[in-house]
Image 1: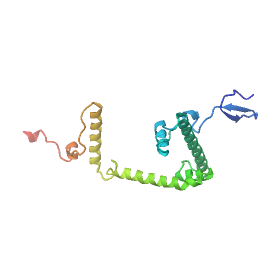
Image 2 (image 1 turned 120 degrees about the vertical axis):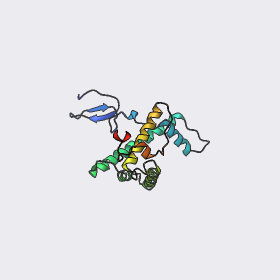
Image 3 (image 1 turned 30 degrees about the vertical axis):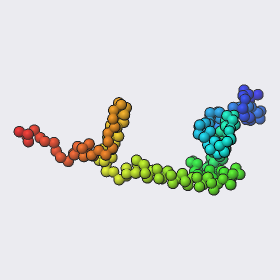
Image 4 (image 1 turned 180 degrees about the horizontal axis):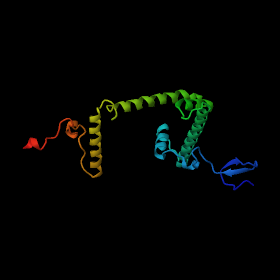
Length: 187
């Protein structure tokens, strides 16, 4: 015999004996460890059904397991597509190709539309977010903003008040071009 038999999947050994092994996913964790947020999935399930329809907890759990398995299937095939193209990073195109290969071609248009929408929302968030004007800042302004953010974080940690965001950069950073008064000039 090749080794110890465990409950789960089946694998062949060198002597062509078949061993039962625990099911494993791509990253090496047991499949039972992979899941989706139960509250979020329950909300999605309820939103998809008429208001007068109830879903048993066992049925919700089964639907969540099906979703996890679907994601594993698409991820695995996307990885294979990526490997066939000798790429190291799975791209959206690999996922679309995986859908086609697995027979889910009718979803490609909707998935692509959702992807495009996600890209637009992500770009809008980046444009309207706090990182918009970072490239427009001078080094002095960036340093002043960094110092303000550090002070704000210290104040939050110490239970103090926050510092106003629009602080005068010149008041925060001493002007290094002006020399300090000498002892002789004070006499």
